[in-house]
Amino acid sequence: MAEEKMADKKNKIDDKKSDAIKQAQKNISKKTEEKDEDLKAEELSEPIEDKKQKKNDKKRRKQEEIKEKFIEFQKTKDKALRDELIEEHMYLAEILAKKYAGRGIDYEDIFQVASVGLILAVDRFDPSKGYVFSSYATPTIIGEIKRHFRDKGWTIKVPRRIQELSKKISVAKNVLAGELGKIPTAEDIADYLDVSYDQVIEAMEASKVYQPGSIDSTIDSSDDGNDLQISDIIGDEDPTYERVENLDYLVRELKKLPKIERTILIERYINRKTQIAIAEELGISQMTVSRIEKKVIRALRVEAEKRMGIEHKKESKKK
Image (cartoon, rainbow, N blue to C red; front, side, top):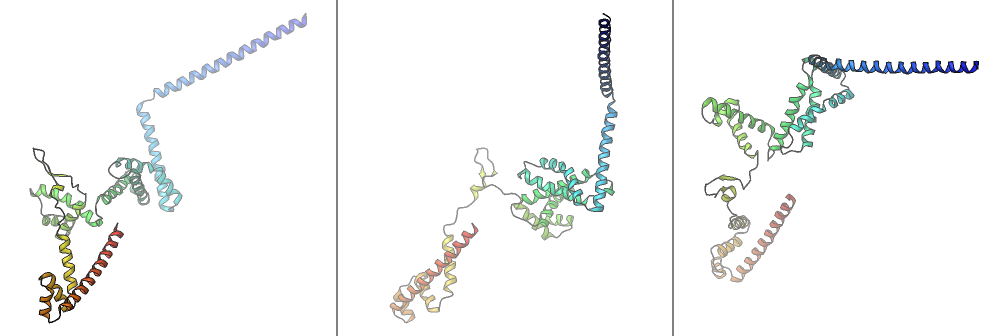
């Protein structure tokens, strides 16, 4: 009996301990939840100004880190550090490339050019000037992209100096038109830009190839719908052109012939004389005139075929 009482008493004590442990765990859990709620409430009650301050501080620290990297890169010219700086700022090239996409040049090409601009900016950036790198890199990248558009936009490859001058002329026209109250002349533009008259004319003529024009474009509109297009005023191929070209060839070949052969051909085919009349004038037989005529005609035909063959080969190479 005594043993049974002792066992019951022990079980009751164990039950009380178990209940105490469970209660303690509940209390701890409750306190943890209350603490989390207090932290959340504290975050929500944090002033907006403090949040902005923290964000600005974080941004400032990042800029300081970048500045330190650029200072180190200037000293060491370390390739790995250079690659790291380029990779960190590649987002600038991507953003600016997207801005100029859809303007006639593939995005991938623009992104490549923008990346080149970024690399140039990394190599040239001087942190001692006090500028933020992104403020320095952005115009550098945009400049490379615009230069690429300018180079690719010209129908015919024009020297860079003429392209640059053409751009300056466009600006000068607008400025001088306002100052002079009239359309400026080439002399006015030359004086304004401090360049020669011939340079202005050259650039103005070159600018005409900046964009190709369609032969279907309208140059004059009318109310009745009969619009005049460029194709309407382009002439047909002159049917006599080939004859003129052949005649020019014959004249050059005739000059190479001996006098008697040249005389026979001119009298026969230009002055329309008979072989007998030509023979009497030259004091030779009609058979001799006929033989010479056939020989020269045959030689000219062979030479003409050679010439046509050479020209055909040249055309094939061009294609």
